[in-house]
Length: 387
Ligand SMILES: NC(=O)c1ccc[n+]([C@@H]2O[C@H](COP(=O)([O-])OP(=O)(O)OC[C@H]3O[C@@H](n4cnc5c(N)ncnc54)[C@H](O)[C@@H]3O)[C@@H](O)[C@H]2O)c1
Image (cartoon, rainbow, N blue to C red; front, side):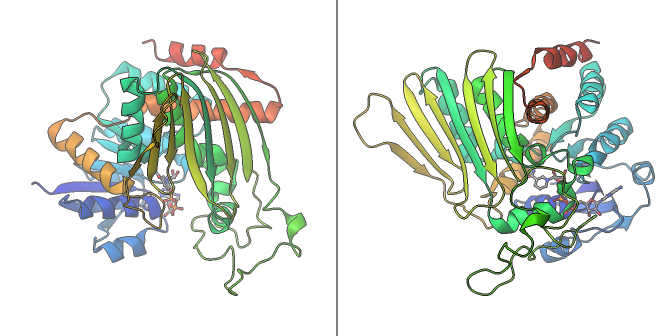
């Protein structure tokens, strides 16, 4: 196998983990160059035995020092649009972290550019698409095993330490992260659109901040029952704040959403970033069967509606501390198969744009407190793609 020459813009925890997973599944790679004012991913790379390569001052300087077999983008979300445009212009294949971009206007401009063609391959890190359990969910839906999908109930509930990290990290500010849901669950809304096989027609959402607030300083416990300090275990990184309860956070720490898709599929979603019983669960009810995907325990349960036998259970094992449960390794294999053999990557940039726009519509509905009609947004998106 050839050695892949890689350039990274935004060498944080995420890209370092993805590079580690790539090496783990057999990529031969050289991290030739990076741009990052203070690479948070450095210790992760060191632990994976990957050398950092040459540091460049700017994306333009890094791209000019090509060629690269892959340019990887992993800076905070507000920089994705700028970095994507530069990297696409340079002509090397690009792997970009999700969410693909942070705003509706960026989505439309990027959709136009991608639809016009002539850009290099672009792979988006919607890593759940590569997970065996998610592939199986999609295969079951497509095979008609559940009949027609009628309604979906889904959750993503994070443990306190993860929520506390989000409240200190750059994700706490809409100007950098977009929103809690955009950064955290654009993965899930990508899959829900794939399951529903339609775009959202109407959305509503309610959410806010009730956990990580200054009002709770002094009353919220700060230690675990074993005496360990809470909300402080992870380095908050770029633009990090010191205290989860007294940061300048302006995104939600809990949020609910409802969607009616264009074909009548209905979905309810509940996310909370500070729970004692963690969960990431999709409950899909069809006319002829039901499925529960438990993404925390990496378990799938399926049963026909009129089946009196026990449900079919598939335990995928492979559970890891990061809750990614082997997804990074699976995505690293998909990425190699695409670059080397031209195999289709499991998610397209357009899927990624639609997932992002879906979450942006949810956040807009939360802001207005009204049910949002998504048709004008999709009309703008479709017309942006006309070239
Ligand atoms: N696919 C997934 O499951 C997944 C998981 C985690 C994060 N992510 C995504 O990965 C991206 C990075 O997240 P992270 O957790 O690694 O964050 P991080 O804070 O660990 O890393 C961000 C890095 O970007 C660097 N940076 C800041 N400004 C920069 C600039 N102008 N140019 C270059 N680098 C700059 C920071 O110094 C830091 O090293 C985000 O878009 C996030 O949504 C995806």
